[in-house]
Image 1 (cartoon, helix red, strand yellow):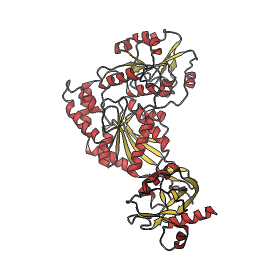
Image 2 (cartoon, rainbow, N blue to C red):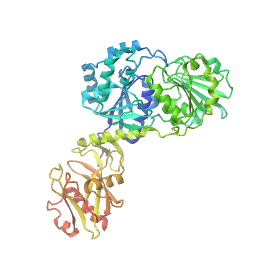
Image 3 (cartoon, rainbow, N blue to C red):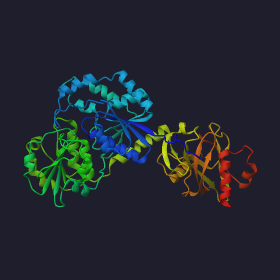
Length: 542
């Protein structure tokens, strides 16, 4: 069968990302990469004010970046401070969402054939999903209404905005919470900390930084928000065996930065991938934020963290570090003055905690599998393949059926009893294809990301309620007609136990003698698909 240029259906997913720092973009990138590992035919439409270079550096998956304001968050005056009055003024302009904006974004999503919306604490993504009729998945360890609630006593103008946002966040179709969770929701799916994975081994990163094997490296990070450091001269006169790397605060520098005596300064968009720096470090010092915590946690290095006393999330993150990670708190005053240097050697020696989370499983894959399962179930996604089984795309089942140029994978299982009789199922009269005809024992589509064996065993459970020993693969072939094109993988097994068929799919089941099948071929008793299968099976037995 010839594969046309039409045979490259992509699964488009919209991702609305908060641009409050780089933490949400980092978490979203980790999830998008993990989805891409499962579904290499995915394409992301990213809506955010986070600069495109961040995603170019972080993502392996193909994407388009749309510069859109997706939330307000807190208006930062520095990496550690924000302005409440400016935040309220920005919220007054941003909320409530205008219908025109929702309609325009919904139209973009429909034109780009987006099948799902992921919102990393962006209320706009959820609101657009409701407007467009597209399923939304909220990813969060806090939501903005929860943050704003803490400041209502100081300024009641936040009450209306918090209530409006709470309603929108509650309207998300699916909810994923990622540790450390600030406000636990019983109905939410829970995932461990989500972090971007490094792209290089630590030794290679350290070599690029010009560090020797004996050098200790301390990474100073403020979570993507520019910050000037008054203590740089103190770093350059500190212990000669300790080298400090400070990314993000020096926009005028070239991409490889500038190396002083004991300090390397880097711009925000540097030639160094931030997770590589984290994994190459012997310790990390900086503002406690979600993505920094998650990446330090997965790297397994000590964390000298700076709590933000006026930010509600900070206490939860700090408690998580104290309970589960290697870390020491550093006051804002000690950090600004540079007095935190007195505890650097202590930081290197921080012990592993009894409930250690360092080097824990990255939650990105767990969240991605959950998202893929949501989309596969709700849209009945089917993978599109070449005649030799090569994966080239995916599309909802309703688009694949009725398009015989889009070949998809199918499994059949021939179930024999100990008397060598073949089990057949009588298709429901409600079936679109071959209603009321006797058909192969078991047959069904292979779900996105599913192995052939897993699909065969799942179909046996779903259609017949049986779980025999793993079936044995016997052959593969292409079955094509005017309605569809299938790459069929056929398995065989023996079963003599009880059968509980699915009455919604199957009207009846019974074992047939081979001679009775042969006598009725071509008489309209069997589906065309089964008659093709039976001839192939008989040829295989010769």
